[in-house]
Length: 145
Image 1 (cartoon, helix red, strand yellow):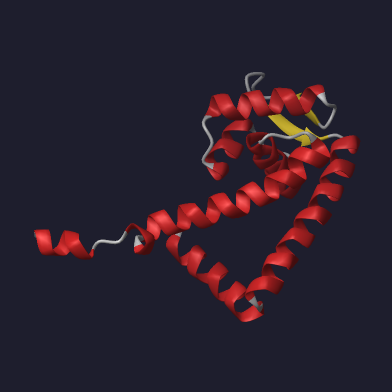
Image 2 (cartoon, rainbow, N blue to C red):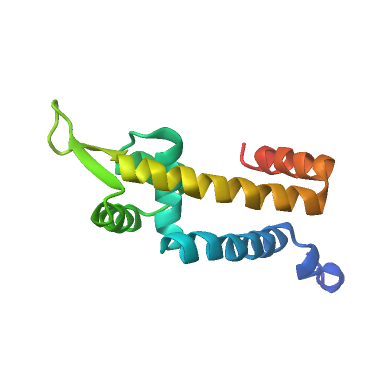
């Protein structure tokens, strides 16, 4: 890389930076919903959303799919459990393994949160336009493969 190359380097056109900026903006906006309505932290929301989509799961499975460290998942599960939204069920084969399930209250809370998340997504889609929104989703999925 030459000095000339560095002269044309622009942080605002560096894809990882722009993705991070966009992600932080959207995450911050959405956090007002799960924080203000449900008292959740970002990590709790991510764990809760995974359970709402695919319950039951183990903490390890949540950590792998959410890219969260196991200690963060564990703390979030404990907090969600204290609220009565999540329960742990020990495996009959291996007592060290616990599956995590949403309780009935957790399921109702998840439905309410999911409705708010859907409305948030619809607002973003309305701002962007259907085609741009779908194209962005497609491009982001390509980056993850």
